[in-house]
Length: 419
Image (cartoon, rainbow, N blue to C red; front, top):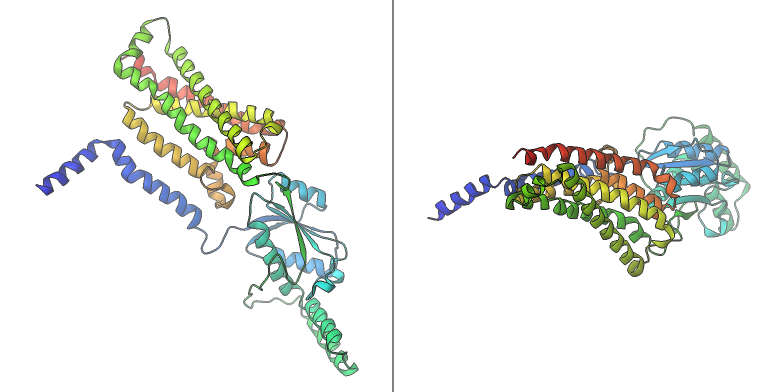
């Protein structure tokens, strides 16, 4: 009897394609996505894209920059040769971090004491990535040990001379001879294993000041950054549910009565689109208003940008909801398909995991989803505080997605006209 009950359960599961999909396909899809995000790193992280500006242009700074370029954890760009352009690159999201080597850096690059700190490096950071600046600071200490052993020895000798009561002439001569031999071999290739030195924001061989050039004046930066991702994900669920009303109307005969009047299928779909888009717009508005009053999201400072992005995002999600509804025959199918599509799009598009921590190939795949475009648009407006004219590409892509999804929904809806 127990075996018969078990067999009956599996037979019912096989007949219910929606339940079968939720049981096996959705877990596999999510496993594949998150394995691609976190499992392809081989114990490390993707290289941090950064820009280095060398204002010192000394021998020490040249060797230091070359050592940074040799770091596997960094992707160093040096084409921007002034601090203003480097800062703009961070603000625009082109790079995660910018490092400025000021004039005078080569005169005293290494310090073992806070009393002898020379020219301090400037690290310009986008605070939406909370780990990039710390990682770069640690690799800066490593690059210093690799590229400037003579500077370390010079500073160590100076400290020894200061705190030991003074070196004798013979000791100074031996040290100078050793330093000359060390400098003569600095350009020789080194194949030995490199190790990371201890370093942190509060200390290290090279002193640095970290400044957040994006998000530094925001009252609640994390909320401002993630509000768009959560909003877009739940907007997709609501739009799909609103589009599914057509399936109920087809089941109870209401759709046939509507089409027998002077209402065409195109007109009906446009009406459904308008309703779902308006509902989505209201949901986004309520969510951002709540964020403004409860979490200090700066909505009213960027009201024009919010309106533009909310309208096009709502249209795109409403069109997708109609497309999903038109491709299904029952509410159960729509529920299963919506769960799969929305969760996968949200995972790849950045609603669940920030895209900057994904491998590059997944970041590129994410642009197939309009989640990524919508989140990028909201990020430009609320996080990077760019003018509304700078989101024209995101607006065009989202409007294009809305047109494509609506066209597919109209084509699939022909089956109701001939039924």
